[in-house]
Length: 175
Ligand code: 2AM
Image (cartoon, rainbow, N blue to C red; front, side, top):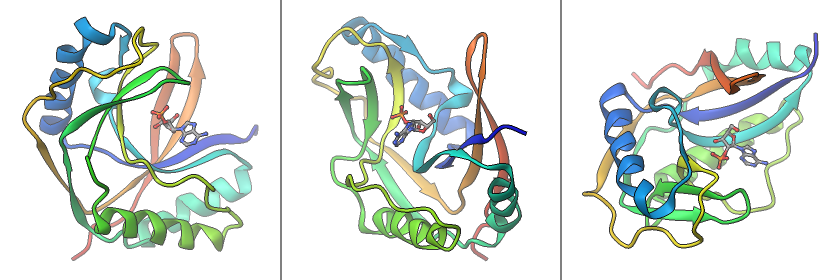
């Protein structure tokens, strides 16, 4: 089995994903680019890259037992990462609880040999890829409140039609 490309993410409930898709639609005349499919919208907490099958299996088994610290994040702005050329939705300021969820996850992942990234956590939901402008639209839609209590482990598979995401494990929500 080849290594699997894995990442941990918060996955929005369908209603929230639908609203996020309208953010993409609203930004498109300004930014151009290719919208993410609604069912693929997510916020990455930890990108692991290619993982050997043995470790991937360990993560799949262990993920239900990682208690993600629950919290709330308010998406209230558009932003741009110019190098990959994406437009995203994200919080103006990273909530302490979300930062703690991220840090706690990476601490847990260190037991599997993963090393946290050197760059600071920039929480975002990618809405458009291959954008044609370096500035985000000036005005975002009304803020979106996202309550989360679990994370998912996702395998990213390359297909002829682009990346396909497959949820391979879920943490258990806090009681
Ligand atoms: P992006 O949306 O900002 O591109 C699957 O590719 C997920 O992992 C996406 O959310 C993607 O973020 C993220 N991702 C891909 N490569 C990454 C990297 N080198 N560092 C951090 N996140 C990455």
